[in-house]
Image (cartoon, rainbow, N blue to C red; front, side, top):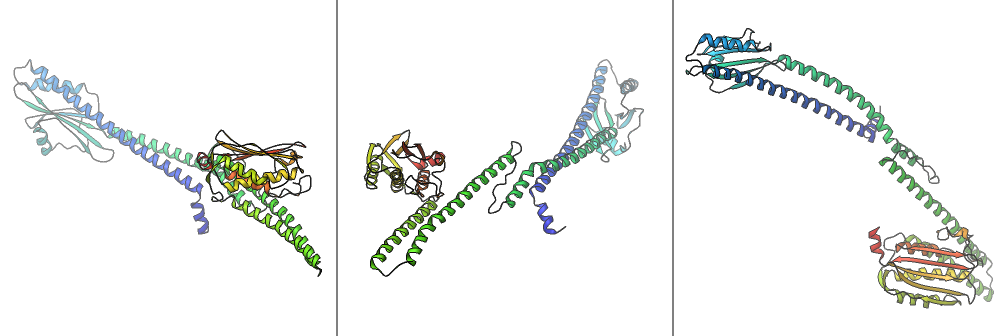
Length: 477
């Protein structure tokens, strides 16, 4: 396998997740096995220590009780008491012996386990004990010997040492068998879990692979492919988000395509007019004057389209608006004085709002002027057009209402789109251009919204609502 392919596989998300799961399961299995073994061995040590101390204590108690009735030390009595005590013990892994005067006085019939040597040094060490001593002798991992040595005192001052030796080899071997079973079971579970993890990670990460495949298959002109959503988890949320992003990209792509197609169509007409008139330009002064006037008018129209497109492009920038605190009543009066100069209509100022708002004075004026210009195109000489403003529910409302022909219901859903459609025409055949798209861009930059109510042959009413402070509205979002 190529080294680059190997590194790519090793660095993949699935491999890393799978390795993480395997390492976690390995660590958990090893740690569990280790701590279970330590716990079993510790419990065995504690149990043996308790048993040895209890047996030695029981012998010491019997000796002290019997000696209350004895006036002197009797070897026969001591031997009988030791024999009776040992005969009641049925554990084959225990060995008892009694030391008196540095000599072994009595022993049990069972022989000492291998590895415990009762030589002179050990005998002297045990004979000189003044307190109970419990020790563990580890010969290897499985063979371990415990012994408990307890001093025994008689009333006449005589003392002895009772030693109980316990061979824990079989107990530890039993623990080792249990640990072997645990290791085998853990290994089987580990193998099964690893296989399940491989299948599970493949299923879980399959949407990511589809995401990669879909993303790589998307071309400049095809944004129609979508990833199927499966389940209700984080991967499904990512899939939904990716599909929604594709929806937005497709809508933007289609809008941009339509925008430039229609923009090209709109600009082609004035350019053709300019070219034809320049080619037919004569030497007659009057004809030259008329041609220059016509060409200048068409160039102005092109300039307006270009400026509108530049403005729409700038509307996405954070510095598009220059915010300032403005008096709503002053701004309304100022706008009204400007719109009355747009055309000979019956202009009406029906309401003036009170209070201050934070906005871009010039952009907001441009919004109302564009709406007023649109109203002029929908009406005739002397028709009423009303404008007004109002402060309501923390928002500033501006509206422009006319009594013209209204907006075709089929265009209401797309009338604010940036595409320049030849079908978006007034009754007089004048194109709406980018005016309403600019209105929407400026209003949305203010974190506001725009609403249209229109009835055929009864006019239209455009209402915009912007928050008193767009910056505060942005923080809430």
